[in-house]
View 1 (cartoon, rainbow, N blue to C red):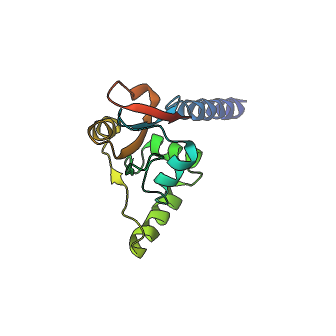
View 2 (cartoon, rainbow, N blue to C red; view 1 turned 30 degrees about the vertical axis):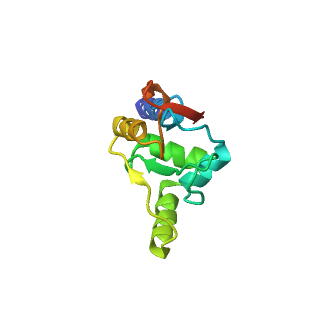
View 3 (cartoon, rainbow, N blue to C red; view 1 turned 90 degrees about the horizontal axis):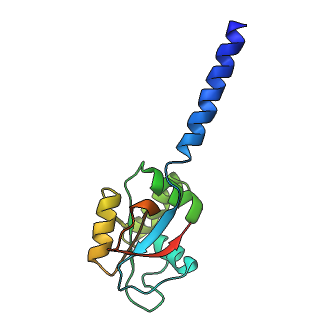
Length: 142
């Protein structure tokens, strides 16, 4: 009986911890400089895949990504780009190796991402929506 109780408690703890891991962030916001025009989700996806180098209005667009291992980066890659972190790393490795694109700029943290995007109208990034302030504009969220 003691063994069954321990298994049930262990199972309950695993379920609770998995549920908590999914609650790391409520929503992801894709952000741009306040002066940048909004872009539709298709164009945004193509920017982050290195297929397009400009916003809808023709202004230059450069993606920024969070560091490897960041939960928001993983969620952005899987939910928005429909690729795993490993697939994205391999994808960008091929683009850089063949000379088709330069790797995205890296931000050290969400705060660094916001500061970089706020300072440069060419940048587009993503953060946990709860971090967004007046220094950047949200063009898409999910």
